[in-house]
Image 1: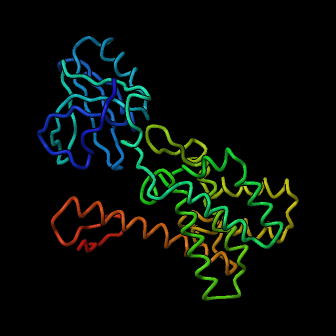
Image 2: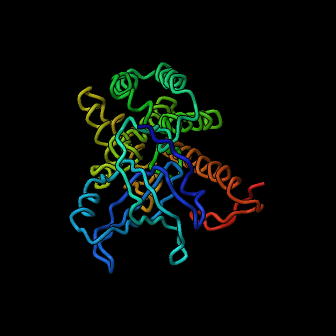
Image 3: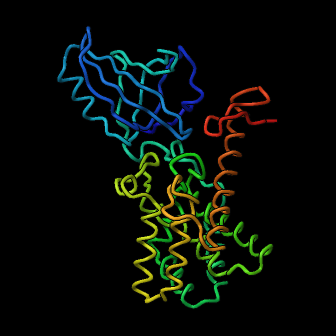
Length: 325
């Protein structure tokens, strides 16, 4: 049986019949209530929004518990129920004989839950390789070729999202963001010719390489256990450092490239163990900021224009209104 997503969570209204597919982001628990046994889930979809789900079951505890245990986290389910507002928050509730059904891979379109690429993936890969071909320093070129000419790594890097949410959270988002950072960095070189081109390109291409290990794609984009415990900056440092050790990269180059990776969030407050301390690290930090922040705000404006007729909408992360006109 094939299931097709009908509407996103963000478009759900109060008091409507729901028969749709969602991803289980979190199983919140199983408990008794006056008329039987119930369980709660947190559901999500490609909009990035979440909604609470409540299943109100019968007195047959084993039946309700079996259904709960059959529902896997991070997988797709088909839900029958009704949307309603509880404590000023929209939720979906199900009462028997309506039910919730696990949906197997192949029975739904992954694009209903992971946003598709915004640019051609093959062309972006060609652009990535073109940047590597421009490298003059043989040590830097050997490093980049060792990482990106590995077919397994390149295929993953090509399709990987750039984040779980906020910015570049779509298929190919990591590659798109990486190329944007490279372009912004080389613009800095035009304005400040003393910057080292090879360091800029290598820093741009490698700054988020740790995201290959920090996040994974199932029915939704989620953090890996390693990613949650370590983070992409440390993971990227370890990956690149290991390759440079195998290649015998000179200590000076190793120190500078690893410093760019460690400092690309700008400060300890935002996850960087060191602030930028060389000009190229400053360039990568601000290039990363430009790419991520402009992606965030342009995607927000697109979404908000479809959600309101007002001229402005309040942006929670930034704490102020954004003009949508």
